[in-house]
Every structure is written in structure tokens, then in C-alpha cells.
Length: 360
Image (cartoon, rainbow, N blue to C red; front, side, top):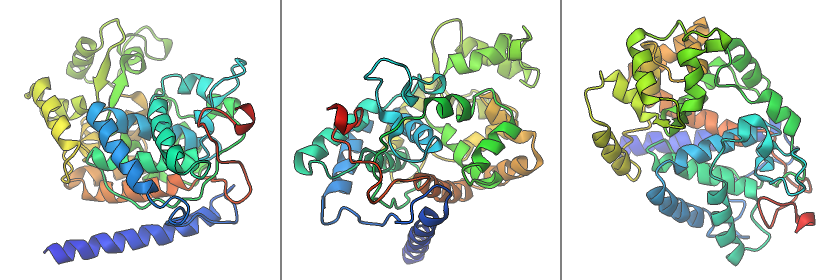
């Protein structure tokens, strides 16, 4: 049985590496020089083990780190490609970097990337890009949260630009409808199934009540709650999100799906254990099961059920123990990590992730 599982895993790794190499060459806007596996083997041979060990320490201290980095990587790759442009700080105080765009003002995890970068610079100065660190750290964070492993190709370089206007216009909104979400994902080469898989990343982390509260009392400016919310779920969300800056742990989704029969304390204990478990207990398909019951926390999530194609994928992912979702999420994340990368002589390798080399 063990040898059979290892054979399946080995096949998946080979399949992902092969597919990723091809995708790095055919995605619109990608360079002709492709990324490769083990790019730093001769330049910084301990890179991946360094990132892994740092991420283990980070996740041990901050259990929400995995979700924060996943969101940070998504916002980076979605605008201009995986080029670390979202990491650039507004050093000129002119408010024109991605980081200052409204959809990005709640991003976290910048300090985690800076911490990893500083340690790598000690042993491999000027060699490893911030964009490679971000995709590697995100992958390791997903694994530490109980999610699937997927190989990451390396060789990215960092952007010398930041794209404030695009970030303002093209980051999917938490209150956006399904047509807009599918359009934005399609522009980046993702079909309906891949879009649904990527949104499954919402099953970890915490969601700020500021993203949920408009559904509870003033949905789309109507002065009324979102009519699609089941009454009992509406009341539960109101209790979880009073008029302050609370956050809701996404594990609340699973808690709700089980009839609110388990205590928040028991969930916190399980989350702390699962962060270092080789058996995924949190990164499963509960997100899709809650959507099937009309209990998506975000309006944009629940919108997956109003489109025939995306609803069919949600149903597909909700049936088994999460294996289908985890496999397809890994593939979609591998594809995401290769989106619009800079290689060769394009961009630069920043010495500090928040500043261009010319500003240091």
C-alpha cells in the first residue's frame, strides 16, 4: 500500500514539474527563458531547506502565517505576474505602489518574507529573488497548514515597477459577482475549474469582519441583509461580527457545517496540532461543503453556486475526503506561481524586498 501511494505521489511530482515548465513558456506575458527546478542548486544550495526551516518557526509562532502568505502571493501574482511587485513599499510617499491600493491595504506577511530574505542574504548575498522566496515560502506554508505539496520552479527576478492602477481595478472583490471573478481569472489563463480550486484557499486563515459586515445590514447599499443568507447563519454571523474589528477564523466554516456543536477551544487546539501534521486535517474540502449549504462567508465565495459550471465543480469537490480538491489545488497553485514571471536580464534581484536596488 505504501509503495503504491509513493508511486502516485512521484507521478504527481513529475507531472507537475513537466506541466509547470511548459506553462512558464506559454502563459501570456511570460519570458521565453523558462524557470527550472533546482535553479539555485549551485548558487545557494541550501535555499529551500532554509526557507522550510524558517517557515516552520514562523508558523509555530503565528498559525495564521500560511493564510497570510497565500493571500500575499495571490495578490502579487494576479497583478503583473509573480514578480514581488506587491512587496515594494511606498518610499516616495506618493501612494502609487500596489501595496497602497485599497484591495491590498489589509495584506499581511511582508515581515515574514523580510525575515527569510535577511537570513538568505547572510549566506547568499544578492542571489535569491524576493519573488522566488515568496512562492517557496507560500508553498511551504500551505504544507505546514496541512495542504498539498507541489514542486516550485525557480529563477524569477523581481520587478522594478509596481502597478497601483491595475491592483485597484483587477483584484477580485469580496463582494464581486461570479461573472467578474471568472473574467479576471480567465484573463490570467485560468478556466472555471481552476478558479474554483484556487478559491478553495479560503478554507484557512481568518477573514476580517469588515469584509462580511456589509452582507449583514447594508448589502449593496440596500440597507438590508444579503437575502441569500440563511436566517440562522445571518444571526450567527451577527454574533461573530459585532460593530468592531473582529476577525472570523475560516475554520468557523467547518464549525458551522457541523451544526455549531463543537467549541471554539477544541478547534483552536486541533488547528495548532494540524499545522505540523503530515495528515491534512484543516486543508480539506469543508469550504465547498459549506457553499453547498449556502454558508459561504464572503458573497464572492457563495457566488460560485449561481453559475452552472462553477457550481458543478463545487459539488465535485465536496463529495470525497478532499483528495480531488487538494490535487487540483496543487496543480492550480503551480500554474499560478509561474504567471508572468521575469527571468534572464529582466527585472533585478532586490537586496531588500521592499526597495528597489537603486533606492538603497
